[in-house]
Length: 379
Image 1 (cartoon, rainbow, N blue to C red):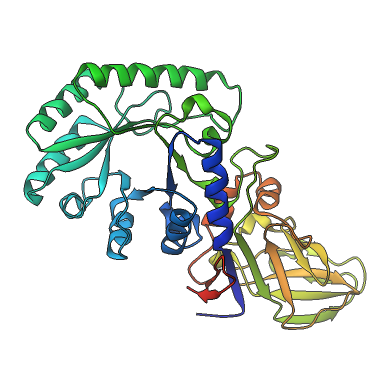
Image 2 (cartoon, rainbow, N blue to C red; image 1 turned 90 degrees about the vertical axis):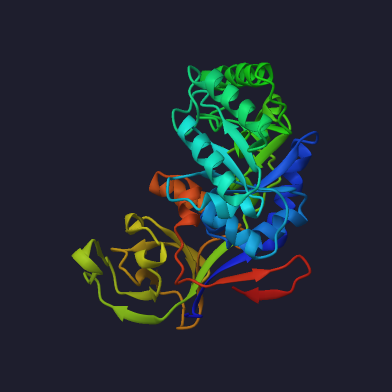
């Protein structure tokens, strides 16, 4: 694994972010969401930092991710909510992983897997309250809750939770938000009518945890905000600190004349004699090719813009007459303390969201960690 580049993760920032978010939802438990390798930050270190910050649940998309948490010795409740037919349900049930159920066929599969495992399955029923993605539609909800109640009475499953997910909670005031909260209340009432008494009701994601106290119920799911990135750009006073800093050594500095074409396609041409610095990160490492002539990078004391096409393994910076040497650092994004761009800045110039910026940083880039006590480690 190369050591010239690093995605450095401040685990104290993750713990602090979870603590700050818990203060926004003081009457609810907190779930730290660690899917997609902890949003690119490293699933296991991020999970432990979230627990240090006060999370008492963890959430993953895939059963395989949840199993990795169990194999690492993490014993808190873990929910996995995407269950394709090939998911190892019996193995998950055997180690007490909670399973999100989004359809009647999935409920049947979980019941069968519980029989194979010889253990009662812990289940969270998901209601589609308007996202139009995973979840049981309102027309099927009465039948699903009745089936779940029968399976619970037979000790095949235990309904631990009822949950849903917002479509537009990152757009404060969007009319769908109130409609989904109302639909969730209706789903909960129907579940109660069927005889279900879930331990936790949850619909709030990061955006809702920050802005919708009426959505907090028993549990808030803290994803992107745990990593210090706001789900609502420009939202003031979040108390969040970005945890990831992406940096690399400069590999080469060269002097070129005016009119020199730079990188594939000569999509950048120098307008004066200047120095070019080569940074050995590219789209194979998660630097978007769309950052060509757009991506902001701090180098030689100033913020620059990527010069020319982002390649598979490298990109160029035009640093003018400023001094830089091989081995000096270029910083793509971080918390912004030293003038570097943030992941939100990258998202803004690329017309995307910061989730994509941090989750796409590839495995070829090693992760380094600083713990709250200041100790460091590589992962």
